Amino acid sequence: MTSRRTLLKWMAMAPAATLFSNSLLSGNAFAAAGTGRFVSQRPPVGKRKFTSAAVEKLIAQTKARIGDPELAWMFENCFPNTLDTTVNVGTLRGKPDTFIVTGDIDAMWMRDSSAQVWPYVHLAKQDKALQQLFRGLIHRHALCISIDPYANAFMPDPASKSNMDWAQHDITDMKPGVAERKWEIDSLCYPIRLAHGYWKATGDTSAFDDDWHASMRIVLKTFREQQRKEGHGPYQFQRPSPRPTESQFLEGYGNPTKPVGMIHAMFRPSDDATVYPFNIPGNLFAVTSLRQLAEMLRTIRHDEATAADCAALADEIQHAAETYGVIRGEQGDYWAYEVDGYGNQLFMDDANVPSLLALPYLGACTQDDARYQRTRAQVWSTHNPYFFKGTAAEGIGGPHEGLRMIWPMSLMMRAFTSNNASEIAQSVSWLKSTHAGTGFMHESFDQDDPKKFTRTWFAWANTLFGELIVELADRHPDVLRKA
Image 1 (cartoon, rainbow, N blue to C red):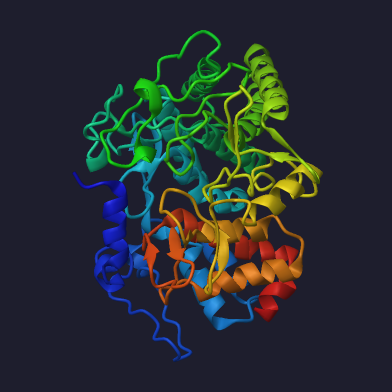
Image 2: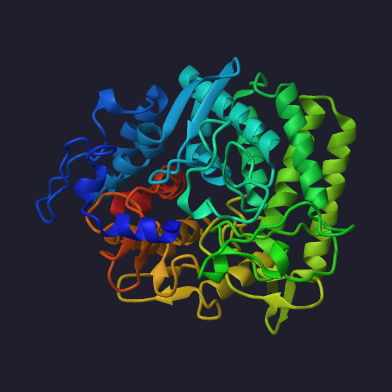
């Protein structure tokens, strides 16, 4: 059986032109190193999956503010990559429908699909086509949640069986339409973040119909179930695999916990198994999402009872996290990554978002929060076993791709969560020097050799890079002018 990791490592080693000839590049050639000429890596206009006039206008405006030609080229390749290559817009069951693949995997992750289009939310008010895209994705998310709130990834056809090689023999309750069934808190948080962001940006409430309302009640029910105050709950997962991060302990229910009010997660945002089931970044993300959901339910659906329940659960999780999820250090307290409620705590960080590093980016705290700043200093140091420092760059990785492998996403989050111009400039410089001549972001790269990387086509990382550049053009324009 070919595992996801094996498949993606093969894709990373394959010649880029071969990989992209039928999907992304459509005949375009990579820019030759040292020539000073950077050829667009976007598909020809007629072969792009989706086109937005507002996005194209922003690309032109932002490129004009970037001093370095290579960085401008990378931005133009990356920012529209989700729209160019991964979006499928149509109708399903009489409603607008949007299905978004991750890139090199032909399935839709709840997390990735939300994050991939997040950088376009603020443009939706001025672009009817984008509004249709977002309404379709909100409808699709509601459908996916109604199929199985414990699944992390779904198939295009809600009635089909998973075609993911690595999921064929999973020991869990697989349902039609599900591609993979790893329970991750963020899988239900990201759709709320997207829906709330779209509503705030446009004022459009047309997507928040009865089906959406019902799916949000399922989210609340699932979070409550996974507090596990009355037994294990309905979810368990095991996978026959030589990699321990692909399965869970104790017949698929995870390591023991003391039910203290936080939500149990069997998998991290990396799709790797948790060690201690209370994942702190995921729980803090849930606090933010529940408060956003409460606002939407109260204002849009006039459902005061469910809104109050969401707010109460958010308060309960926040209190439990602050009681059990904090490590008392000599210089002050900081967040753990995972805990069990018995007093056992794991400190590390994983580049996948939600992470400890990314908490302000997700609205889980302010950037100048003292506990966050202490946590940030710890995760960007050798105190974090997945912090790597080499000749090419320094950054955070995770167990998913192993030691020495830095994730560009961590460099982006370092820049998003910093006000230090030098620190931001250094992060951007590393991103520019580690794309291995492709003009795109990757999942991870070797700390000493960026040519050793995973995932040639990883749309979330591409679009996130574009989001960072757009944000810096307003927040730190000097960084881009001097880059």
